[in-house]
Length: 384
Ligand code: FNR
Image (cartoon, rainbow, N blue to C red; front, side, top):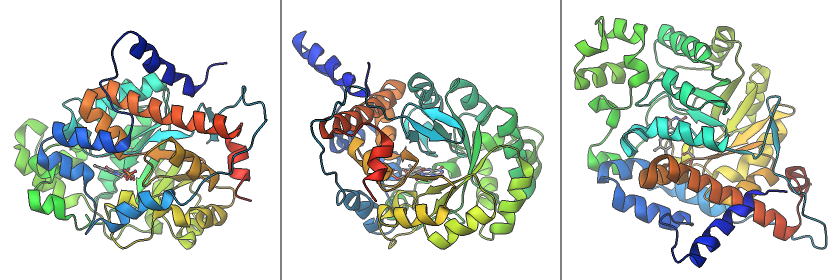
C-alpha cells in the first residue's frame, strides 16, 4: 500500500545517485530562500502581518504546545489520512489557502498553483485577487476540488456577478472572507509603499467583469490604465458594513455550498450555523489583519463545539505536517496551508508548490506511522 511518507525515498535514492534536492525541507529554509528570490516589496507582503506581527508569531508557536502521546505495537501498515468534507472524500485534509498575490510572486503564479493542485488532487481556494481570471484558474485546476474565495466589495451587483461567474466556471464552493472589511495595519507594506493592486496587479477578476467596467465607466479593460484600474478597485474593494444580512443575500445567490472564512469567536460560529452556511473556515488570516488577537489554534476546539454538525476548517500558522495533525486532533475537518506553499511557488513555480505539499503530507503520514495512529478519526478522538 502506497503512503504519502514514501515521498522521502526519492531523496535517499537521489543521494545514492550522487545529488541532493534543490528545494528545502523545512519552513525556515523555505522562507530564507524565498527572501533571496523575491523583490523586497513582494517578500514583505507575503512574510508580513499586522502591527508588530505578534499574532502571526504566536499562531505558529502556539501550535507547538500541542502534541501526541505515541501508541505502540499496533499494525500501522494500512493507515490513511482520508478526510470527508461536503460529501466528498479526500486523500488528505490539506487544502491550499487563498492568497491574493500569487501573480506577483511568480509570473504565472495563480495558474502554477492551480496546476499543482490538479497534480496533487488537493482542494484549493482561489482568491478574488489574482492575475489570472477565475475562469482560467477553474479550468487549470482540472478535477481538483476548487473553491472561489469572494472578497465582498461594496457593490452588490459586482459580488453577484463574481459569484455567478464562479458557478458557471464550475467551482465546487464559495468561501466568503469576512475579516477584511478593511485592510489591516501592515508596517512592512507601509515601509515598502507596496500594495500590488494599486499598480493594477492581481485584479484580473475585476478587469474581466462587466460590472466592474461599468463602475469604472469604460467599455473594455484596455481603456483603463493600470493605476486608474487600481484606484477604481480601491474605491470598491472593501465593504465595512458587510454583515449577516449579506450572508443571507449571498445564500440566495448561489446553489454552491458557502463557507465563511475568518470566524474565530464561538458566538459568530453559532450565528454562521443559524444562517445556514455549509462550513466555517476558522482563521485569523495568518495574523495579517488584526494584531493582538489570540493565537488561532487556541480557540479551535471551542469553535468546533459551537459549530455542532457544521464542519470547521482551520488555517493560520500551519508550517509542517505535524501542525496539520495538531489541527485535526483539535477538531478541524480540513487544514489550510498559506505562506509555506507561496514560498515554494517563489522558488520553483508549480514544482515548488507540489514539493512543499508533498513534504508536509509525508511528514504528517510518517508522524502517524511512527506514533501508530491509523486514521484522522483516531487523532481527533485523542482530544476527548
Ligand atoms: C493571504 N490570505 C488571504 N485570504 C483570503 O481570504 N484572501 C486573500 O486574497 C488572501 N491573501 C493573502 C495573501 C498573502 C500573502 C497571505 C500570506 C495570506 C490569508 C490566507 O488565506 C490564510 O488565511 C493565511 O495565509 C494563513 O496563515 P499562514 O499559515 O500563512 O500563516
